[in-house]
Length: 387
Image (tube, rainbow, N blue to C red; front, side):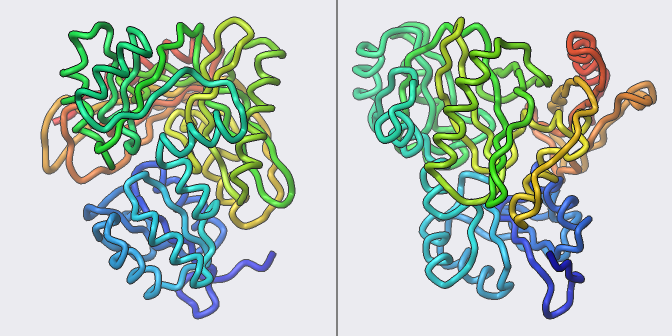
């Protein structure tokens, strides 16, 4: 491959549609290869804005606004990094000859829980939990009775657990309906899922391009209200269950096609593996790869986009703990103990311009035996404060 120089007329350009903490790491990895980076988000000074060559603040659900910035910048590759994007703009961009990662149809299927669930369960025949889609409170009540309690209720389009809840009895349905309105994206339709009494859940990072498909070691994680609190790698699981997860991940990513990394989520019960969700981009639980792998999920994503070989070395086991703000601030400051920074641990601060209670502001990373790493990562996260 020929590597270019940023800001020159022949520069290879990556445009990030969504510029949060995951996009920031993608931008850094692209910059390391001399790629020009354009970061776009709905708010100013988003994390990736801080490290990009140029930044734009637009309404990303406005098709005309998205197409305007694409036409202005003429990116080589367009990387959607959030769910709340005008999908119609991506289809139109492809018609105009732009390269959407992995492709517009894959984004359309995966950034909407209805589309990806129907694709996985009904088109590919993969094992999933039971589900229904509803658009009204009355429909939600009826679906809850049919699916059974407890059941999981999510907006069809959202991220980081926003709008997600568990209705444990029929009395919780009205509250779940209100919670769903907090979605980052589209809350006009909800998915009601059977609650699988799983033993554990994993993310299987699946990376593909024309050179082939590879899998990172399975990542275990703890989530609260759909947003991750702790992740670790590798997740101890049987060879049989891991192979089932790989087979399912390859089937669904082959079906979607295109280049890039996919965060494929599964529930595992005994030896049964249930497909849950898929993100066509780096995954929040995959931030643990910043310390466990020679090529993090972000570096592998950029390699996949560029068509480079997909290879990496595992440094060892590790864990990642999320720090969420406890205060509201327009000038957030994090207090992090010096002891957090050792030969095998550190903290990544995202640099978000505002903090809100519960907003993820940083992560702790530890390289150690899995159980020890989990304890240390949580302890470091707990030692952080904000103001």
